[in-house]
Amino acid sequence: GAVVSQHPSWVICKSGTSVKIECRSLDFQATTMFWYRQFPKQSLMLMATSNEGSKATYEQGVEKDKFLINHASLTLSTLTVTSAHPEDSSFYICSAPPGDRGWSYTFGSGTRLTVV
Amino acid sequence: AQSVTQLGSHVSVSEGALVLLRCNYSSSVPPYLFWYVQYPNQGLQLLLKYTTGATLVKGINGFEAEFKKSETSFHLTKPSAHMSDAAEYFCAVSTNNAGNMLTFGGGTRLMVKP
Image (cartoon, rainbow over all chains, first blue to last red; front, side):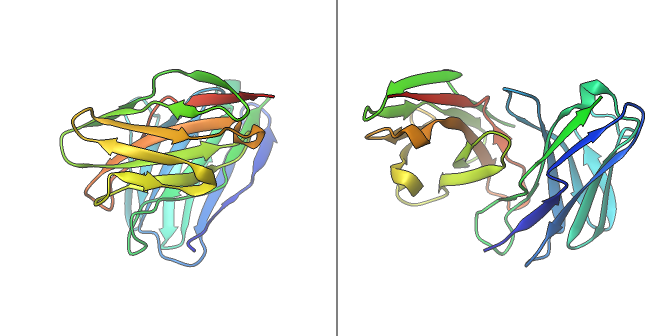
């Protein structure tokens, strides 16, 4: 079945540094990738939608300059958290929407980011 | 616009008892509905989904859900809870557009008592 590989699975970084999270579609092409953020004991909230070949679409309240999203190819979407602060500590999950795979969303395994 | 409400952020049942997790949705067009399970520090696993056709949907691990349009509900049930069912459960809605995003409910933490 369709697989989205997300790396790293966990990362600890210092305040002020940047962290890049990658999501790769392994056996299909993903023209779109959704990026979600999940704070502890909360639900998944959509941050942005990346589209191959065009600019990402950000949800209201999400800082574009802080959360840089790039959809470099049909199999790779990245989220870079720039100048990370402790309040950015969260669980980040990517998801490829249904395409030719029937009505199935494919999720990455998630990245636990801890900013110290 | 679409939204999902999960009644009860925490549900506790005894092992062997019926599991009922409630989900109500709002959608201006016919919805596609999903239930996912999440174990700590892991991604989401699809339990079941409703797109079209039969309104009673059977999923993995003995779970099922029934789409009731008149009640705008998609409640998740399992006849007999197992300890391994303890996890976070999310109901989600999308619409008849393959590129549309999933909107998640707030989640329900299921606890199973021995």
